[in-house]
Image (cartoon, rainbow, N blue to C red; front, top):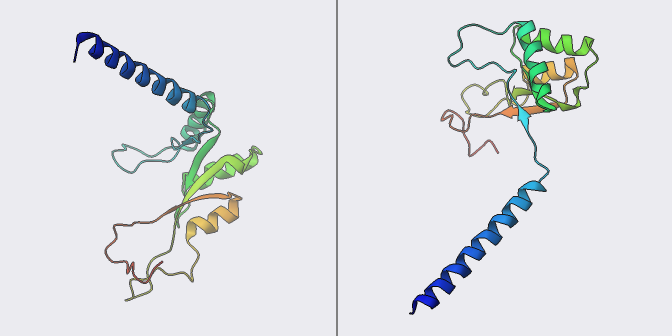
Length: 154
């Protein structure tokens, strides 16, 4: 193979790579992507202290400055926590809840001795979603839970 043939082949490959790059950028430019902000939800790993209501309000304002509209606002538990107060605050402020999300367990636990999720009792997260008018729920399922009988739970 001559130097001219190699140069021609390299040129063809480089041209193809650039064409693919342009196509990829164009595809990304035209994507209608979904960005869900999770800044308000507290991480239980490594935190020094809990958020206050004012912390959550301040975080919401910062998230909105970024132009993000879909936001996780709560993770509920049996006890009243700052997330309950925050969602009440959002209601009083007459916020549009259509872009707010919350987390809920898929179940309140297992039917005793079966390894099958209890489907009779509504999880507290769903109960509070209904109470507060949150319509977007992200269900948490621990797929690595070896105590669940995955053959029966489908």
